[in-house]
Structures are given as C-alpha cells and as structure tokens.
Length: 549
Image (cartoon, rainbow, N blue to C red; front, side, top):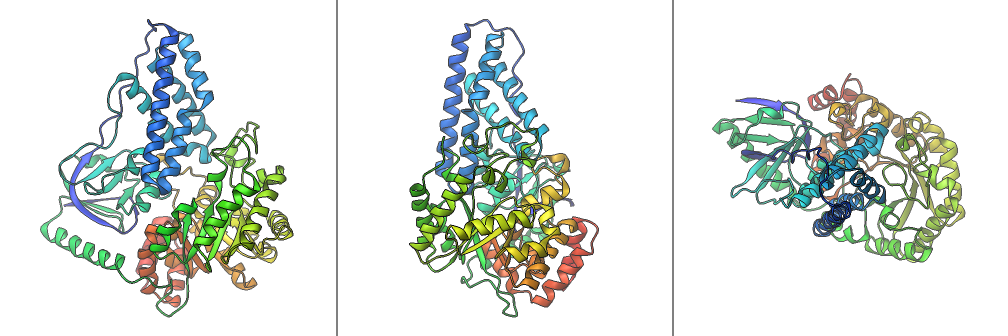
C-alpha cells in the first residue's frame, strides 16, 4: 500500500478501480489542402455549429454552474474572430482540420500569455478544438470512457463538457494531475458532490484497473488498500451520508455562535434547489447571465423582472447581489470594446462600470425597484474594488438610486490592506477568495505549473482575510466570504476564527460545512485560525489547523 497526495475537493470518499481518460486526438497533419477552399470552409462551419449546439444542449441538461461553463464554451465555437482565422488559414492552403487546430492553438497561447482569468479559458478552448476536429473526422470526441462497472476516473484534467454530464452511477470519484481548488473541474465536482482530488503530481502512478481509495477530505489516494483500509473507508462513507441527511438547521458553532450559511447562484431558476439544501439566503448572485448573451445592455424592465423573481423566491431572507462583473474573461462590447494587454488587470468589474456609468445606474435602479416590490433583504455589492475611494463612490451612488445596503467585494489585496478605511465607508464586505488568492499569489487558477500556489489556505491570503475580519469587527460591519474557500469545511471554521460573519458557497457544500461548524466552538475556531496564520505555507497551515483540538 502507498499513498499520493493532492488537493481535495469536498469530503467524499470512494473506493474502486482506476479508469484513465484516453489520449487526445492526434494533431492534424500539416499537409497542403487538395480540396476546394469553400468546401473546407463549409465543413468547418458545420462542425463549429454542431459542437456549439451540442455544448448548449449539454449545458441545458446539466444546469447550475455547469451550464454557465458550457455556454461559454459554445460561445467560443461561434467566436467570429476564430472563424475568420480558420477561414484565412484555409485560404492560405491548410486543410480544415489543420486550420482549426492552428487557429484554436494560437488563441489558446494568447490566452495563456494574457494570464489571469483569460488563461483559465485555455483548457476550455482546447476541448472545443478537439470536438470540432473529431466532428470533421467523423469520430467520437475524446471524453469519459464507457464502462459497465463503477470506476475512479483519472485524467490530466477534465473538460467542462465531460464533468457536467458524468454518470454518477459509474464515476465514483475524480483524480486530475492538473488544476487547483478553484479550477472548473473542482468547482463542478463540488457542485455535483463528486469526491475529487486535483493537482495530483504523481497521478501517473495510477494505472487502469488498480484499486484505490480516494479520500477528498484528506486529499489522499491510497493505492492497493488493505481490507481494513477499505472497511474504514466504508465506515467513514456511512458517516458522511448520515451528515448529508441530517435535519437542516441554521448555521452555527457548537457554542451557539451564529454563522449564516448561504448559496452562490447564477440564475433565479437555481433558487429552489438551494433552498431545499438549506440555504439561509444568497451570499452571491451573479448578474452576468443577463448581459453575456446580449449585444446591448438589458433594459431596466428586463433586469427588474429577473431580480424580482430571485428576491421573491427568498422572501424575508438576505440576498446579496453582485453588480455586473464584466471584463477579462467576460468581455462585453457595449461595456468595454478596447483591446488590453492584460485584461485580468485592466478595465474590469467596477472599473468598467464606472467608465460606462449609465449601465451601472440602470442596474442599480432595476435592483432598487425589485427591492421595493418584494420582502427580501437586498444587499448590493461592487466587484473588483481596489480602495476606499472606489468603495465610497459605489456606496454613495447605490444609495442615491435607492439601494438600502451597499458594500464591496474584497478580491484585490489593496482593499484588504486598507480594510479599516473601507469598513468606514461601506455597509459590508464580501471576500471573493478565488480572485483574492489569484491576485495575492500571482497564480492562474488552471495552470498546472502553479496550481500549488492557487490555494486559499496560504497564510498570505489568510492574513489579508484576518485584516478584513478585524476591521469589520471594529466597525461593527459584516464580513462574509463567497469564494470557493467557504465550501471547504475545515477552512470554513478557520474563516470564522478570522472574523468572517457569514459563508456562501455552492449549495451542495452546505451540509458538510454546517456539520463541521456544529462540532466547533468559537474559541476552537480562533485557535485553529491562529495556528494557520502562523504557518509558512498552505500545506502547513492545513496541518497546523487540524492539529488544534
């Protein structure tokens, strides 16, 4: 028996034989085109549209976070710039397959070079390219292998289209050699309650047919376990099922200290499932779905209807809505059509909204009107806020337009460093740990070479959160977390110990976090937080917190 380590996603445990993902399609040969250019272009256009339709269909069937990711992939297949590049390469003599490969690869390299959120799209783009080439060849697209029996799926990484529709009767757990805790594979695995371990450097040791135990809570993969190891895993699995089926209660520590547990949502249609899983409200509602599919900004009326539907579903509960977070990986021509060298560090979030203030004003007006028509407790926050001046600008404008509670997201380290001043001008702060980690450690979320940096357990990130928590406590202002860090039960306890007053996550994680909080007192949470803060690395912070009773 031996063990290898990675970054666990969730707390699930699974035992079964390994099945590995097949190798990608072979690179198309670089040979001169012998067919008519228009015939090749027509075939490519048909393949691109077929792939886009398939991705849209998969997204509609999957719903939730998966739908957003797959819709973004479908948009890639329909990107006019890519189509023009492919056609130009065909005109220059390439075959359709080679033109698709080269155009997508050039775009992929550009995204990686841009860094930030743009780099996160690189693997998504590769998946679309493979699907288009497969369609042109008349073969099945690479994907999850078929099996008559359940298995542990091991891969370099998983495409969103594969993760979204995994057969949960067959796929017991996921193991990937790339990716971090906030990669698409991790996010979708968590939202579907699939045990997963990502960033496993030694994943190549796992060969097809080998029996393993995947323990996401511990981040370990036990190779060829003993019978006693398997029995222990089965007992722990039974315990986890008991936790998942426990009565839903408000989030609180063992000593009664209240910690509201809320849901991260992207559409009003997701409200029912979140409520069924015990969400006490919404800690992050992403409004981008109203804007990304449009060639112009939605009207006040269109926005009001969507916001009213959401607020009605959460009548009497807190709902935190994020103002449009566009730019970077979510470019909108009507918001910012200029090219930027590094859009992840450019005109995105509040910066873009401030440059086109009419769009921000219309969104805030629609939210205020929806607030007036419902009984939900609406809070509105701005994304990508860098300093107190930006915070004051947004809060002042929001209240001028009728918003009662206005705050900011802490995603940029500078905001945490000026936490006291920010607390003085905003009603609340919500920490987006995904971006805060990325910007603090300068590590793209999907780049395997830096995946070990992209970890919210890193003491540098925890110290910034501690600054925000302390400033909130001193000012009597709420400080929540709405990033993926809140979905990690052990880290959730540490966050509370750092002064965080509420946690928001994918609804599938609510039961595990609720159970872990209920086993811990505030004194213990603070002790674990102190131990993690004093550690020199993310891994040692985890170990130090776990060692505290």
